[in-house]
Length: 234
Image (tube, rainbow, N blue to C red):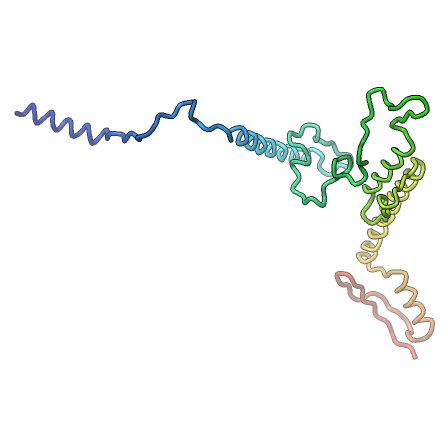
């Protein structure tokens, strides 16, 4: 009797220590009935995320490596993600040049063969053709600074020669640099408690006409202003 009681107690302890695992009822899943249609897409998305993290780390290393040096080294050749895929900008900021949506792209583009020209005899057309180069130069004008007025190159079917395009390009760069210098000069003048030429001339006329007797100098400055003290005239 004691043996039977001992076995029952042992079975109860084993049942409490090792509970039975419920087995789900249903068909056994095998390699034939598993849906793997989206596995490729999930793998590509995961790989894209890994590539983005790698590129972010690469940009941080590039920034740390260059520091404040005027000559910087680019690690773009070691990036994993294409710049277009990595861009979060809107459709208005996409560079349409040399794409199917390029407005300067001809309706029926003719590819240039490996030999470098098409046609025969007098009808030979090369990549250096005047019309082809002219339209390409017109399309490249869209890359100038935003403030540079390039006009409607599509409506008038504008074609620019290399000489004219190079002159316009140099002029656009010169205007951009001059605008940057003028902006920097104005900021420097405000920081140095100076006045612009028009205000200086106005102050000189007021003293010369007798409206002011003398201007003693600067007494206060603001974020974008300079206050001068003067004695009144007649």
